[in-house]
Each structure stands twice: as structure tokens, then as C-alpha cells.
Image (cartoon, rainbow, N blue to C red):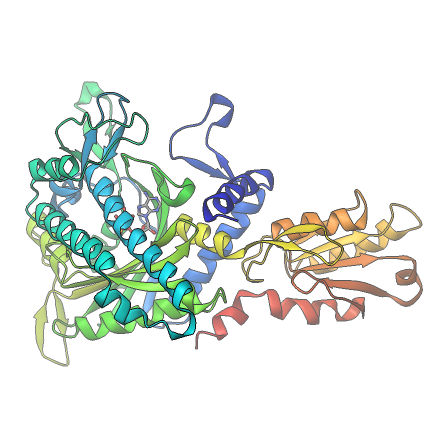
Length: 513
Ligand code: ATP
């Protein structure tokens, strides 16, 4: 099945099974804003818990905070967001559609890459086992021609972005013959900068209301609390502060479902280190974070690093961890070496000293920072993309199954009485009443057992138990495994022991050590 079709199916699956709904749907929705349903919220909470515990429980020198969404407006001046948190936008006069100029060009670069890869794949098929890919890429005239066009475009684009040259960005779009996907025309406006922060007012207008912003990242809440946490927690460098919370960006082009939203959630950790040691820590956090992703078991080849060529003015190293989504490898997490830029800026704008006295060195300095920043929603999307499977069974039927890591699954165990009478529901309730204290269980007595298994497969429930007449005689149930579909007869008394460990976040965390 084409990857595009898989993605479409996944989006409708999310709605049909209570994972993600378009926001305000009965009013026809609100662009790039989504709500999480009964299963989505459980999966999301499990992802957050996995992250939080891997940071705060597993590291003695990382603590958490929960800062407010509203912050003093000067914070966003100091951080550079008021002046520079912009995207270059361009409109098509015919379709009246708005695009990000940088995204239009990056898509064009991706098209060249696609062409080259297709060419290579065709040759691989033609030559079979004797195919030498590196040699083919280095010698095929057709590949070389496309590669040269691609590299020239990439260089021109990087230069224009670094110089903030909006006229040049427009010229690239014209020279490359990029058309609007809706109107198919090249009738483009000028490129303009557009600030992504949402603003609102605090206080009544009679008092002279103050313009405040909805935070576009959670990190600044950590920076402005650095002194509070360091002092009250008696934290010694190196140490980290973690936070999970909502962030808001008025994204120009909202695409790909929950990949790019206007309201989303971030999990960020700022790690404060001694100046000069930051690149060592950067390397360490790159590895630690990749391991966290890989522990979920989707396959190590589903992830890759993408080192940034264009660094933000305050950064001295940056990389993304990308996941192989149905629409290509895409950023899920960013790891940035942010130097001492943010703390120094807050020192300057607030007039307060934000220095750390290092007793070992016997000197004071402004700490350097390594940031790990991951979007909960993008992580959620990557988990769903990695889990969604359509399988053809031996009897020719297909089943849709979410092979979620058990620790993240919304429901861990479904409790199913075979029929709705003869005391089976009562027995099933007894099992529920015992196990619900240990993990999330769901009771279901409606429809045939086969249909009920399918419903649980569709939401990724790793285990189902069926209660039948034999249960009343010998206190055993049938335990079904989601992935293998194997069934075994086990005693009710053993259920907790068999399941609890396999579905717990603790077990997942132990694989990280
Ligand atoms: P992009 O280049 O895709 O716009 P970014 O580099 O601006 O992302 P960061 O500012 O580094 O993203 O934010 C850190 C993380 O927050 C990202 O890796 C992503 O997971 C998440 N994130 C950022 N913007 C959005 C958004 N609009 N919707 C959902 N998640 C987002």
C-alpha cells in the first residue's frame, strides 16, 4: 500500500477509535488544533510518564517544574522571540493560499532527492547482486546532473536563509518554477516575515492592558526559574530542569495531522553545565535520547540523526532525532547546545545576576545549556505510525492492529465474559475489581468474542482474557496475546504476575539502564 494511503488510514483510525478528534468538530473544526479522545489521552499520558520518569526518576541531578503559560512579556524580548521568531511566508494570488517560502523550497530539494533515489533504485533492480550503489551515484550522468541541481539549490537556499534575504527566497521559487499545488500557477506575492507568537491582553483596557504572549516554547519558563530551582534545590552543576507543558505557535501552514499544530505540548529538559564541557554533554544527551526512542522497539532503522547545518545564532551544535513517518524521515526531537545565550540575555534584561559559583573551580560563571526538546504530539504520531499494521490472517481476513509498546498502550487488559449470562459477567467483574488497581482494564460483553478481540487489537490492548464456563469450575481463563494471537489457559491468580511486569513503564525504564 502506498505510504500516503497508510497515513490517511491512520488518521481515520485515530478518529474512529477515540485517539484524536479535530477540535471543535461540530463547528467544522479549527485549523491545526486537535483534541485527544478516551484512548488518545491514555497513550499521551503514558508517553509523558515514560519521558518524565526517564528524566526525573533516573537522574538524581534532574528535577522538574511546572511554570505558567503566561510570562512577563520582556522574557520574549530577551529570548529573541519578539524580533526573530518568524517564518517567511508567501501567498499565491490565484488560490489565495499561504505557504512558508522555506518549506516550498525544501520540498523542491526533497523532489530532487526523490528523483535521484528512484534512479538508483531502478538501476539496483537492473543490475541485481552486482550493483555497486556508491559507484553508480558517483558516475551515472543522470544522477550527477540531478545531484548538481540539488546541491546548487541547497547552497543558494542556505545562503538566502542565513542572510534573511526574502527577495532571494522569492526569486528561488520563481527560478525553480515552483507552482501552487492548488491553483497550479506561479503568481506569487512578495515574501514577508510573519511572527509565530500568539498575543493576547492581560488586565482590563481601562487600566491599560498589557500585551502578553502564549508561550511558543516551554524552555523560557525553565530559564527564568533557574535561580529559584538552583538555590532552593541546592543543585550543583551539572544539573537539569525538566518540564512538560503546552506551547503555541501560529503556524502558517498546518499540515500532516498532529505533526504541525498551533497548540501542542512539549517535553523539554535544560541541562546546565560548566562552560567548555558543553560539547561532551551534547554528545552524551544525543546518545541518551536516541536510546530512549529505540527502547520502544520499532526498529533502530526507523530513527536517524539530522545534524543542523544552519545553527541558530546562539547555538554551537544542534541535531534532530528523526522518525521514519509515512511521509518521510521527520523531526520528532531537537537536541541543542544553546551556550549561555538565554541565561545571559535574562541577566541583561532583568538586571539580576544569574551566575553560578563553582566551589571546585572557585569561580563564578553563567552556565552553558544543553537542551533536549521533544513534542508530545509528534512523539504520539511516531508511536502510532510505528504501531499501525494491517495483517492478513490465515483465514484470509484482515485485522488492523496497533502493535503499541505494552507500556504505552491505553488499555492493558480487556476482560471478556464469553456470554452475558450463567454468572460469567459477575466472574469477569470480580477479575476487573481486583486488577483495576494494578493497570488499566476494560470490560466488554457486547458482540461475538472475535469482534471484541478485533476492537481491542484496533486500540492496541496487549492482553485479553475470556471468562467461560470452565472458569467457574477451575478458576482459569483464556489469556490471548495481541501480537501472536496465541491463547493459553491460565489461573486467575496468576494474571497479575504474568501481565503487570510486561505492561509497566518501570520495565521499559529498566531497559534504559
Ligand atoms: P519545525 O522545524 O518542524 O517547525 P522546530 O525546529 O521549530 O520544528 P523546535 O522549536 O526545536 O521545533 O521544537 C522542539 C520540538 O517541539 C520539535 O522537535 C517538535 O517535536 C515539537 N514541535 C515544534 N513545533 C510544533 C508544532 N507546530 N506542532 C507539534 N509539535 C511541534
